[in-house]
Picture 1 (spheres, helix red, strand yellow):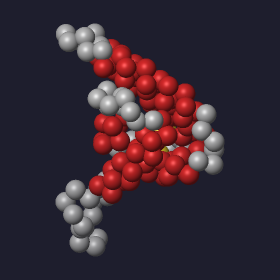
Picture 2 (tube, helix red, strand yellow):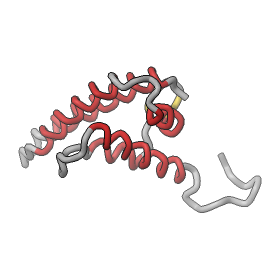
Picture 3 (tube, helix red, strand yellow):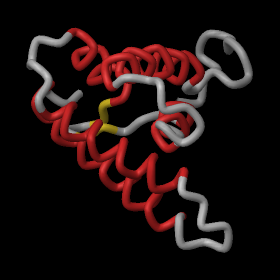
Picture 4 (cartoon, one colour):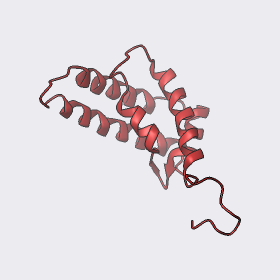
Length: 126
């Protein structure tokens, strides 16, 4: 599990990479400007995450739920939501989005390795 400081740095780098991807999506056939507004919002969110106080409990929770080694490694739904930030709705604040990501990461963690339901004790392959 990454430390909170590592998580801030790793999460910001991850979000910046998604911003770069979102900006590149603008160059597809549709030239959808929502890609640019999302890319800009993601950059601002990454900067904001890096400035969060180390004692923000959401960072601890994300480190536990979406941390692998020293890296931020979001689950499927968490990654999906990050990629959609400010694409359809610009009303979400950075603070509200981080809180939302924690709740999504909790759902992702609840699904990890349990797609077939609870296994018979000793029969779980991982």
